[in-house]
Image 1 (cartoon, rainbow, N blue to C red):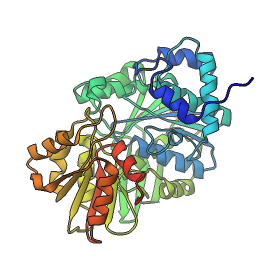
Image 2 (image 1 turned 45 degrees about the vertical axis):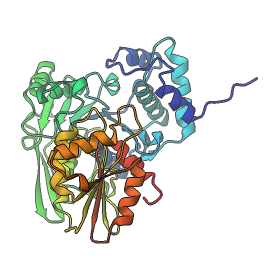
Image 3 (image 1 turned 180 degrees about the vertical axis):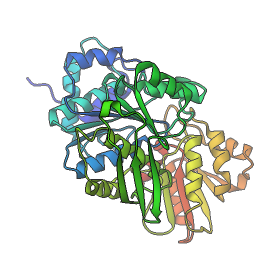
Image 4 (image 1 turned 90 degrees about the horizontal axis):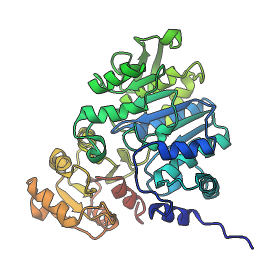
Length: 435
């Protein structure tokens, strides 16, 4: 008698419930043990992408550009918005349920008594699937920090840290320097690493120097310049030549990226710096770069939906992202009524996010997130009132979907609705009937 195969939904439920021993246990011992047992050793270049914000967009740019250059690209991202499959993509397309189920089954057969978390299963499955698909390049988005994140079980050929700011303080530390040290953990000796801000935090510089990483930073080793409102130029001029392995390069007359927001040009520059570091292994021409910049997709990152009223989805959930959202909202057309659909998790700095964005909205539609880490609507309301927002400007709903649908029904074509505060807030909105 054969045993019926578990569905992907059943696998994910078991993983979420910790059936395989899997509480979050920051460290690489468990995943490295299973990785070695399964001989998951990529033969293609591996790119690690970390950072407080912007890493999803960099993964999207790299995926689109390498795909347009004719390479087969495996991309691991997290979290997902609507389906787990989004996390494991080949050439930008999520793999199917059966492919993931087969990978999970192989991991289960190989792990023995080693406990594995949801995230460790996720990373192992992705790399297994990419190896079996014989991809030309793997792009691994770091989930949490870097040094002890599951993706760091694999050595990268190029590592990128897009930005550094406070987030996940209970895991990564209470200062930017502590966070930067954790994120620098994806660097490798004698390999190039990219930092998307200048100057890089001192702890990152010190760590790179200590282990012999060749750290290239924005504004020093690579830079951007606007040509006009529709085009920009990229210059790559590494101050460390890595024994002649890196070549100076100019990429001129590039189109403004399809992804919205001022910061996307910086994210694109980080992506191009990564491409130049791997150019000898994976050459890319200007045509592929131009097409990739125009075709890159990254749902929920300052995503402006077509039509009226203006509707914006933004997964930003920390102060750094809130400042970027504020800047980008101020560049949108004038709106008569500005409505926020808002909810956050309890382990995020909600008070500062509200303080940054409180002047951008005339009314707030709030709702709880039905998650262990979700805040109650009353908690969110109290924070808004504490920030000086009048109680009559706040409306409580039982679900984010209902808040979104009511905002749409109450809006005129000259109004603006912005959904933000969490991946979960945006995901609930995207699953609504009127999305």
